[in-house]
Image (cartoon, rainbow, N blue to C red; front, side, top):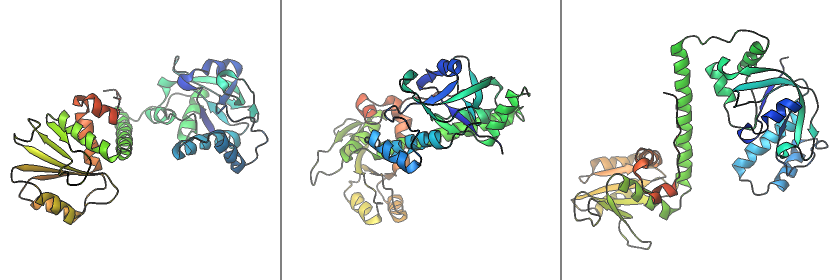
Length: 331
C-alpha cells in the first residue's frame, strides 16, 4: 500500500522552514492545546479544542479542528512529509520517523510535532502545473492526492520531470485554475455582501451608482419614505435620468405583486432599479420586461458583478463596506 504524503507548512510565510530542515521535524501550532499524547479519539480532541478556542466561528472551527485532528490521528510513522521553502523555491521531502510528540516552548510555539528524516529537496520549477496547484493550497496541513505524491517520489528517486503534454494543455490547465480562483473569489464577495445590514446595503447600492457617475440621496429610515435611493446627474432628481432604487435585503424571493407595486409608484420619466439579494420569481422578471417604464432587476450575482466592475471608481465609504484587494495573475 502506498504511503501517504502530507504537506505541513512551516508557519506564516514559512518562518520556521529553516528550523524544520536543520532540526529534522515538522510541526503545527494551536499552542493553546497542550500535550495530546493521551487523547485517544477525535471526540475527546473536539472537547479540548472547543474549550481552548471558544471564540472560533463554525467555519474556522471546522477548518482548524479538521487539521489538528488529522495531524494527531492520521499521520503515521513511515508516511512522507513535505514542506515549502519559498526563499529557495524548493520542497524538502522526507519520511516521518516518530509517533506524535509534544515539545513545549518549541520555535514559534509549534509544539505538536513529528520527527522527520529528510531525503531530498524538490525544486518547484520541476513540478507540473497540476502539482503546483495542489501544493499551493493555503491550509497548514493537507494530504496530497496520489498523482502529486507520485510525481514528488519520481523526482526524489532521480527520475525526469513529468513533461507537460504540450504548451496548449499547460495553458488550458492554468486557465482552469484561474477560472476556479475567480469563481471562488466571486462567491466570497457575495458572502460578504450578504452579511451587510439593510442600511449598509442601501449605502452600497448608492456607492455603486456614484462610481458610475451619478449623484445620490439615500432615504432615512421610517415608513412612507418612498424609494430607498434616488440617483440622478444633479443629485436632486431634477435632471434626467432619475433612477428610483428599492433595496430588499432578505432571503425571500420578490414576486410579481411586490414588483407591480414598485412600478406603480414610478413616474413616466423615472427609471426603476429593484435590488433583491433574495432574487426574483419568473413572474416578477416578466413584470419588469413588460413595464412601460424601464425597470432593471438586480439580484445578488448582478450586484456583486456591478461592485467588482465599478470598484476602482468607488469612494472610500463604499470600499469600507466591502474591502477588496487585487490579485495579480501571470499573463
